[in-house]
Length: 292
Image (cartoon, rainbow, N blue to C red; front, side):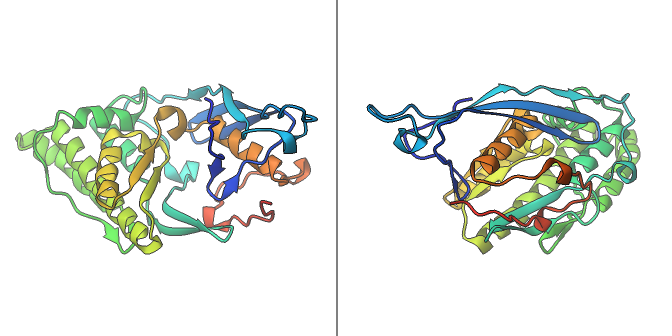
């Protein structure tokens, strides 16, 4: 991937500094059953004619190339998965960044949306290959009937446990009576959950005066979510920035890219101070260094 361009490259409020040295970074990201390892190379811009090769005499902003970005997933048998209590996996929904701090505008108050979809896939006995959420997405395309489900928006937060319990009950009650199919339930669940995310996202955009949405995370691969969020953003005169599975699900490339930026701007952590905090929240991040 080459993201060099005529205009200066900006990531958030960071402008990529000019450097006369090539950099190679390795990034690792993992979760309960996935691990991704990315290798990224920064190539400095070519020096101007007559320049001494110093970054200050260079033209352009250089380029970033993803050399490799493999991911491995442990697939459990259909109908089985990981217990949230064991994995202690926490997701947030809507965040903003201001004054070198992240602010969480809305989050789940019980389970993550991906966990909700995964659990329902297990109830239906769907395969975990390539992922439960993907298989729900494909089955939902065959749904023809919308089934009313509880709507769990609590201010700027969302709740999924009640919806999951209700739709699980319909697997026996509705499907066995012939009033709905598994495809109908997948379709209805997706539409309800995604409508909740779109609602709180639009409210956050209005509060911040923004019109661009960045979708990340495993559920961010879902084309229907991207479509619904895109319609909302377009009505506000904006757009949605969405990625495919290579950069939504656990991947090392984005970690390596962030590491390169931090290194180039003078930030870093000594190896002996480098640790992993499983329950670390985004809004707990304090950026000790400031870009030039």
